[in-house]
Length: 113
Length: 111
View 1 (cartoon, rainbow over the protein chains, first blue to last red):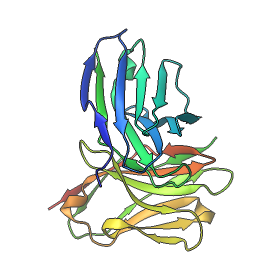
View 2: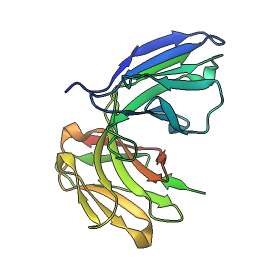
View 3: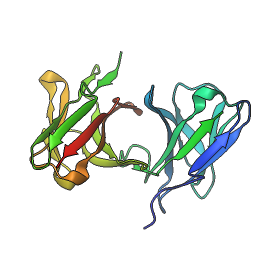
View 4: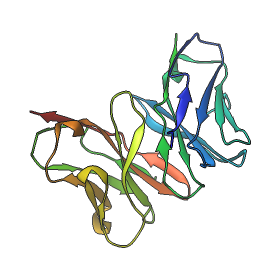
């Protein structure tokens, strides 16, 4: 069974631009969560989606948004990029919410210049 | 405030030696507890988890962790470290669908 895939793996953007990251969960998994990892703040939860609905949201500004499609694939979008948005963005999938069996993708490394 | 603390930022052990990575949490009630490992350039892999019951939990790759309620701790152990265990280890807690990670402990393994 293929693991969680994230595209692109690396991305360089300029301050003020917007970016969209994609995550394909493990086949059969219906819950997708997103995390931001930075050296200063560590791993922080962004949001969780299940059945195309956002179930939970971390403490991030409205510039960070996401969505989930009917095939469980998810995208996250960051608008008006700031230098501090440079991070590794990790996606994790699980069969259902609350199963606590999260499988992480390799992440997308976003650099904002 | 709810928090997860990994007191050791970096630990170096010799190959074959035993390992213990510390994790303490501060929550009103016992949360669900996890240990993840992250190799360079990779995502996180779940090593083990504790929800309830037996306080000694066995995980993958020969790791185990012990939950101690009195100390609010969930320390990760391995009796004999292999060079391939060099990675960053994260303790995580989840209470009411609020997953929080510790800052991580980087493990270096000396030959």
